[in-house]
Image (cartoon, rainbow, N blue to C red):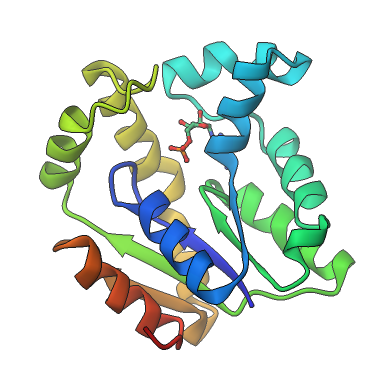
Length: 188
Ligand code: AMP
């Protein structure tokens, strides 16, 4: 089963993605984690994207899309994968469609985690993970970027009918996990 997780920064996407992938036995593909890993390892790509991440901007659609296309061909993705943080723009969604077609794969569901903006701000400013992009100014910018270029993806996937599953992301982690599982038709 291949799934996309959509949701603003602070919506709990990463946490819920970790839980769902563990229960479904599919790979968790987080583009943010991949990029932060490249920065930490000091790879050429890491050096290229470091400043972009610190500003809360998006890295280029083609760079991130080829990274994902390569990643989903790894062995651990054979049982399926969850894309956490990708696609994030309309062009990325188009590039993903093209890649899935090339690979003979399809999406079973696109989960949209919905959390009101005032709660997102509160969660992000208090989460203290020590991320370089968790300063108040950058947090605001990441929320703006989400609203302007990522949120429109919900309408795009909604046009495809039942594939889009809106999930209320407010509440305890366990409650949200139960909603997410039922949204993708998984027990637990
Ligand atoms: P995340 O962990 O998903 O919040 O991502 C952290 C940062 O990584 C974002 O603010 C972007 O700078 C970058 N990033 C992650 N995924 C993407 C993507 N699909 N397209 C462009 N930039 C991304």
